[in-house]
Each structure stands twice: as C-alpha cells, then as structure tokens.
Length: 79
Image 1 (tube, rainbow, N blue to C red):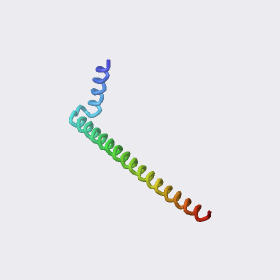
Image 2 (cartoon, rainbow, N blue to C red):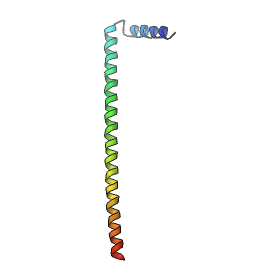
Image 3 (spheres, rainbow, N blue to C red):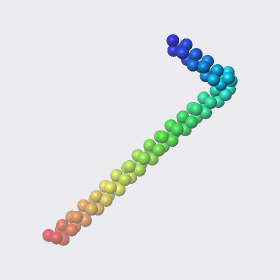
C-alpha cells in the first residue's frame, strides 16, 4: 500500500512538472541542499548560544565572588 501511494505521489509530481524529471530532480536536490544548510546553521547557532551562556555564567560567578569579597572586607572594617 505504501509503495502504491509513493508511486501515485511521484506520478502526481511528474504531472505537476510536466513530466520533466530533470526539473523535478533539480528541485529535490535544491530542497535537500537547503535543508542541510539550515540544519548546519541551527547546529552552529545552538553551539554559539551554549558557549555564550557558559561565558555569562562564568562572568556572573566571578562577579559574585568579587562582591562577596567586598562585603567581607566591609564587614571586617565595620567590626
């Protein structure tokens, strides 16, 4: 049943493109190239965002340590 529906789908696509399999194949290739490019873009963007978040966390940790140290020094001066 699946093979039959696939065959009908291909036949419909061929009619849509006037039976020109070259155009159909080119469009399919372009589609997959775009899909792969998009997938790579999403992966690299995800990686960059993860790196940025790690750097922000490191910065916050350093800032909190500095603030803690300042507060401790101020407390010692007050006592």
